[in-house]
Length: 111
Image 1: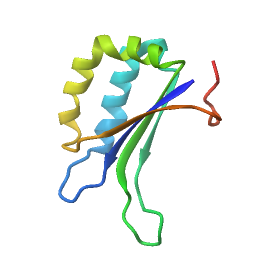
Image 2: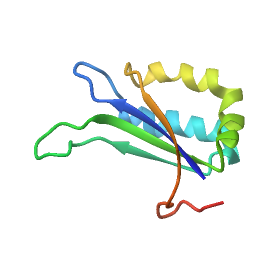
Image 3: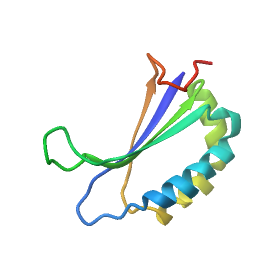
């Protein structure tokens, strides 16, 4: 199983609408990807690694798929629609990483 992590760096003066991301954008992504997206999670940054430090990322999501190919097959045909929705919740350029899941989180089954 793989995890596609999309991370939005906390940047002074930037905009990130967590409610829109949670209630509209990620459900849109899931509906378009269908079964290619096994599960997803959303993180809201609240602090950094030291006391009272700001978060490194204001928001993150993790999309779980069986393989990179499954992600590409689910996301690719809808990429334009999904990517064009980004302007509705942020002006931050995301950092993206694809990882192999070594240990699955609770609720994420290894298919």
